[in-house]
Image (tube, rainbow, N blue to C red):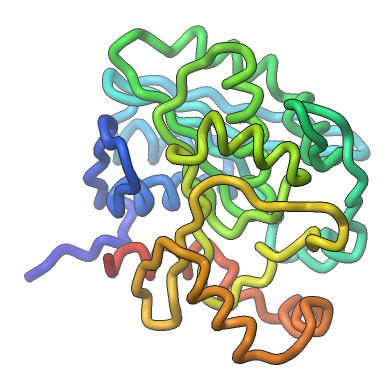
Length: 271
Protein backbone atom coordinates (compact mmCIF):
# COMPACT_ATOMS: atom_id res chain seq x y z
CA UNK A 1 0.00 0.00 0.00
CA UNK A 2 1.48 3.35 -1.06
CA UNK A 3 2.09 6.02 1.56
CA UNK A 4 -0.15 9.07 1.67
CA UNK A 5 2.26 11.84 0.65
CA UNK A 6 -0.12 14.61 1.75
CA UNK A 7 0.38 13.81 5.46
CA UNK A 8 2.65 15.96 7.59
CA UNK A 9 4.75 12.93 8.49
CA UNK A 10 5.74 12.20 4.89
CA UNK A 11 8.86 13.92 3.58
CA UNK A 12 11.70 12.84 1.30
CA UNK A 13 13.70 16.04 0.98
CA UNK A 14 16.71 16.27 -1.35
CA UNK A 15 18.94 19.10 -0.06
CA UNK A 16 21.51 18.66 -2.84
CA UNK A 17 18.99 18.93 -5.69
CA UNK A 18 20.21 21.10 -8.56
CA UNK A 19 17.05 21.36 -10.67
CA UNK A 20 13.34 21.19 -9.90
CA UNK A 21 12.52 18.43 -7.42
CA UNK A 22 8.99 17.11 -6.95
CA UNK A 23 9.88 15.95 -3.43
CA UNK A 24 11.37 19.31 -2.47
CA UNK A 25 8.36 21.15 -3.88
CA UNK A 26 6.02 19.00 -1.80
CA UNK A 27 8.00 19.35 1.42
CA UNK A 28 8.41 23.11 1.05
CA UNK A 29 4.70 23.46 0.25
CA UNK A 30 4.09 21.82 3.63
CA UNK A 31 6.43 24.35 5.23
CA UNK A 32 4.52 27.15 3.49
CA UNK A 33 1.29 25.69 4.89
CA UNK A 34 2.77 25.30 8.38
CA UNK A 35 3.75 28.99 8.35
CA UNK A 36 0.05 29.85 8.89
CA UNK A 37 -0.11 27.92 12.19
CA UNK A 38 0.68 29.00 15.74
CA UNK A 39 4.37 29.24 16.74
CA UNK A 40 4.32 26.29 19.16
CA UNK A 41 2.76 24.00 16.55
CA UNK A 42 5.29 25.12 13.94
CA UNK A 43 8.17 24.29 16.26
CA UNK A 44 6.66 20.94 17.26
CA UNK A 45 6.18 19.80 13.67
CA UNK A 46 9.62 20.98 12.57
CA UNK A 47 11.43 19.27 15.43
CA UNK A 48 9.31 16.21 16.21
CA UNK A 49 8.01 15.24 12.75
CA UNK A 50 10.62 16.65 10.40
CA UNK A 51 13.82 16.09 12.35
CA UNK A 52 14.96 19.70 12.61
CA UNK A 53 17.24 20.67 15.45
CA UNK A 54 16.78 24.44 15.50
CA UNK A 55 13.73 26.66 15.21
CA UNK A 56 13.16 30.41 15.46
CA UNK A 57 9.87 32.26 15.05
CA UNK A 58 10.17 35.53 13.12
CA UNK A 59 7.55 38.23 13.67
CA UNK A 60 6.92 41.94 13.26
CA UNK A 61 3.55 43.29 14.34
CA UNK A 62 2.20 46.84 14.43
CA UNK A 63 -1.01 48.68 13.56
CA UNK A 64 0.04 48.60 9.90
CA UNK A 65 2.09 45.39 9.60
CA UNK A 66 1.64 41.75 10.55
CA UNK A 67 4.54 39.72 9.22
CA UNK A 68 5.42 36.17 10.25
CA UNK A 69 8.00 33.64 9.18
CA UNK A 70 10.21 30.99 10.73
CA UNK A 71 13.71 29.62 10.25
CA UNK A 72 14.40 25.98 11.02
CA UNK A 73 17.53 23.91 10.49
CA UNK A 74 19.29 20.58 10.90
CA UNK A 75 22.67 19.28 9.74
CA UNK A 76 21.62 19.10 6.07
CA UNK A 77 19.35 22.08 5.49
CA UNK A 78 18.16 25.48 6.66
CA UNK A 79 14.66 26.56 5.65
CA UNK A 80 13.04 30.00 5.81
CA UNK A 81 9.25 29.90 5.40
CA UNK A 82 7.09 33.03 5.16
CA UNK A 83 3.43 33.16 6.10
CA UNK A 84 1.17 34.46 3.34
CA UNK A 85 -2.17 36.26 3.28
CA UNK A 86 -4.70 34.46 5.42
CA UNK A 87 -7.77 33.27 3.42
CA UNK A 88 -10.23 35.34 5.48
CA UNK A 89 -8.24 38.49 4.63
CA UNK A 90 -7.94 37.88 0.88
CA UNK A 91 -10.74 40.33 0.04
CA UNK A 92 -9.01 43.19 1.90
CA UNK A 93 -5.64 42.30 0.38
CA UNK A 94 -6.93 42.48 -3.21
CA UNK A 95 -9.10 45.58 -2.66
CA UNK A 96 -6.34 47.53 -0.92
CA UNK A 97 -3.39 46.33 -2.98
CA UNK A 98 -0.69 48.97 -3.12
CA UNK A 99 0.98 48.58 -6.52
CA UNK A 100 3.49 51.39 -6.05
CA UNK A 101 7.07 50.47 -6.86
CA UNK A 102 10.27 51.35 -5.06
CA UNK A 103 13.81 51.17 -6.45
CA UNK A 104 15.80 48.11 -5.32
CA UNK A 105 18.01 45.40 -6.82
CA UNK A 106 18.78 47.30 -10.04
CA UNK A 107 15.09 47.60 -10.78
CA UNK A 108 11.83 48.40 -9.05
CA UNK A 109 9.89 46.19 -6.65
CA UNK A 110 6.54 46.23 -4.87
CA UNK A 111 6.83 48.83 -2.12
CA UNK A 112 4.66 47.01 0.43
CA UNK A 113 6.28 43.59 -0.06
CA UNK A 114 9.75 45.11 0.17
CA UNK A 115 8.82 46.95 3.35
CA UNK A 116 7.69 43.66 4.89
CA UNK A 117 10.99 41.95 4.09
CA UNK A 118 12.99 44.91 5.40
CA UNK A 119 11.08 44.87 8.69
CA UNK A 120 12.09 41.27 9.47
CA UNK A 121 15.37 40.96 7.59
CA UNK A 122 17.61 41.53 10.62
CA UNK A 123 15.80 38.74 12.49
CA UNK A 124 16.18 36.44 9.49
CA UNK A 125 19.86 37.24 8.99
CA UNK A 126 20.54 36.64 12.69
CA UNK A 127 18.81 33.24 12.61
CA UNK A 128 20.72 32.19 9.49
CA UNK A 129 23.99 33.25 11.11
CA UNK A 130 23.18 31.37 14.32
CA UNK A 131 21.95 28.14 12.69
CA UNK A 132 24.01 27.86 9.50
CA UNK A 133 27.17 25.86 8.97
CA UNK A 134 29.05 25.07 5.74
CA UNK A 135 27.51 21.64 5.07
CA UNK A 136 23.93 22.98 5.04
CA UNK A 137 21.91 24.00 2.00
CA UNK A 138 19.62 27.02 2.39
CA UNK A 139 16.05 27.07 1.05
CA UNK A 140 13.38 29.80 1.10
CA UNK A 141 9.66 29.21 0.52
CA UNK A 142 6.25 30.81 0.90
CA UNK A 143 2.66 30.77 -0.32
CA UNK A 144 0.69 33.71 -1.73
CA UNK A 145 2.11 36.93 -0.31
CA UNK A 146 4.59 34.73 1.55
CA UNK A 147 5.92 33.60 -1.82
CA UNK A 148 6.39 37.22 -2.84
CA UNK A 149 8.33 37.87 0.38
CA UNK A 150 10.44 34.75 -0.18
CA UNK A 151 11.39 36.01 -3.64
CA UNK A 152 12.41 39.44 -2.39
CA UNK A 153 14.24 37.89 0.57
CA UNK A 154 16.15 35.76 -1.95
CA UNK A 155 17.13 38.92 -3.84
CA UNK A 156 18.28 40.44 -0.54
CA UNK A 157 20.25 37.29 0.30
CA UNK A 158 21.98 37.38 -3.09
CA UNK A 159 22.86 41.03 -2.54
CA UNK A 160 24.51 40.40 0.84
CA UNK A 161 26.31 37.22 -0.23
CA UNK A 162 24.17 34.48 1.36
CA UNK A 163 24.39 31.37 -0.81
CA UNK A 164 20.96 29.86 -1.50
CA UNK A 165 20.33 26.41 -2.89
CA UNK A 166 16.74 26.90 -4.07
CA UNK A 167 13.53 28.89 -3.55
CA UNK A 168 10.02 27.44 -4.05
CA UNK A 169 6.94 29.66 -4.11
CA UNK A 170 3.29 28.68 -4.38
CA UNK A 171 0.61 30.99 -5.81
CA UNK A 172 2.72 34.11 -5.45
CA UNK A 173 1.78 37.51 -6.93
CA UNK A 174 4.23 39.50 -9.04
CA UNK A 175 6.87 41.37 -7.04
CA UNK A 176 8.65 43.77 -9.40
CA UNK A 177 9.08 45.29 -12.82
CA UNK A 178 10.90 43.98 -15.89
CA UNK A 179 14.21 45.53 -14.79
CA UNK A 180 14.06 43.68 -11.48
CA UNK A 181 12.95 40.45 -13.17
CA UNK A 182 15.87 40.67 -15.61
CA UNK A 183 18.36 41.25 -12.79
CA UNK A 184 16.91 38.43 -10.70
CA UNK A 185 16.79 35.98 -13.60
CA UNK A 186 20.40 36.65 -14.56
CA UNK A 187 21.46 35.65 -11.05
CA UNK A 188 18.94 33.08 -9.85
CA UNK A 189 16.29 32.02 -12.39
CA UNK A 190 17.33 28.36 -12.44
CA UNK A 191 17.04 28.12 -8.64
CA UNK A 192 13.68 29.81 -8.02
CA UNK A 193 10.63 27.74 -8.89
CA UNK A 194 7.38 29.70 -9.09
CA UNK A 195 4.62 27.10 -8.89
CA UNK A 196 1.17 28.04 -10.18
CA UNK A 197 -1.93 25.89 -9.75
CA UNK A 198 -4.62 25.71 -12.43
CA UNK A 199 -7.16 28.46 -11.81
CA UNK A 200 -5.09 30.36 -9.22
CA UNK A 201 -5.60 33.94 -10.40
CA UNK A 202 -3.78 35.55 -7.47
CA UNK A 203 -0.62 34.86 -9.47
CA UNK A 204 -1.81 37.40 -12.09
CA UNK A 205 -1.66 40.46 -9.81
CA UNK A 206 -0.39 43.11 -9.85
CA UNK A 207 -1.03 43.11 -13.59
CA UNK A 208 1.47 43.77 -16.36
CA UNK A 209 -0.41 47.01 -17.03
CA UNK A 210 0.86 48.11 -13.61
CA UNK A 211 4.43 47.60 -14.94
CA UNK A 212 4.92 44.28 -13.12
CA UNK A 213 6.64 41.17 -14.46
CA UNK A 214 7.19 37.70 -12.98
CA UNK A 215 10.65 36.22 -12.38
CA UNK A 216 12.07 32.76 -11.76
CA UNK A 217 11.28 29.42 -13.39
CA UNK A 218 7.59 28.90 -14.15
CA UNK A 219 6.04 25.59 -13.05
CA UNK A 220 2.37 24.98 -13.90
CA UNK A 221 0.10 22.33 -12.35
CA UNK A 222 -2.78 21.73 -14.75
CA UNK A 223 -6.35 20.69 -13.96
CA UNK A 224 -5.37 17.01 -13.85
CA UNK A 225 -2.33 17.67 -11.68
CA UNK A 226 0.23 17.19 -14.45
CA UNK A 227 3.32 19.37 -14.13
CA UNK A 228 4.44 21.58 -17.03
CA UNK A 229 7.63 23.64 -17.13
CA UNK A 230 6.49 26.15 -19.75
CA UNK A 231 3.88 28.91 -19.95
CA UNK A 232 1.93 27.61 -22.96
CA UNK A 233 -0.53 25.63 -20.83
CA UNK A 234 -1.18 28.64 -18.59
CA UNK A 235 -1.83 30.80 -21.66
CA UNK A 236 -4.25 28.18 -22.93
CA UNK A 237 -6.10 28.32 -19.60
CA UNK A 238 -6.62 32.08 -20.00
CA UNK A 239 -7.61 31.78 -23.64
CA UNK A 240 -10.25 29.18 -22.72
CA UNK A 241 -11.79 31.44 -20.05
CA UNK A 242 -12.33 34.48 -22.25
CA UNK A 243 -12.84 36.87 -19.30
CA UNK A 244 -10.72 39.63 -17.79
CA UNK A 245 -8.46 39.29 -14.75
CA UNK A 246 -10.69 41.70 -12.81
CA UNK A 247 -13.82 39.65 -13.59
CA UNK A 248 -12.00 36.59 -12.32
CA UNK A 249 -10.85 38.35 -9.17
CA UNK A 250 -14.44 39.28 -8.37
CA UNK A 251 -15.48 35.67 -8.93
CA UNK A 252 -12.57 34.13 -7.05
CA UNK A 253 -12.53 36.07 -3.79
CA UNK A 254 -15.47 34.08 -2.42
CA UNK A 255 -13.90 30.78 -3.52
CA UNK A 256 -10.12 30.68 -3.41
CA UNK A 257 -9.93 26.88 -3.46
CA UNK A 258 -7.33 26.75 -6.22
CA UNK A 259 -5.15 29.21 -4.27
CA UNK A 260 -5.19 27.26 -1.01
CA UNK A 261 -2.01 25.57 0.17
CA UNK A 262 -4.00 22.33 0.43
CA UNK A 263 -4.69 22.44 -3.32
CA UNK A 264 -0.98 22.78 -4.06
CA UNK A 265 -0.04 19.98 -1.64
CA UNK A 266 -2.64 17.60 -3.08
CA UNK A 267 -1.38 18.09 -6.64
CA UNK A 268 2.30 17.99 -5.76
CA UNK A 269 1.70 14.73 -3.87
CA UNK A 270 0.47 13.21 -7.15
CA UNK A 271 3.79 13.82 -8.95
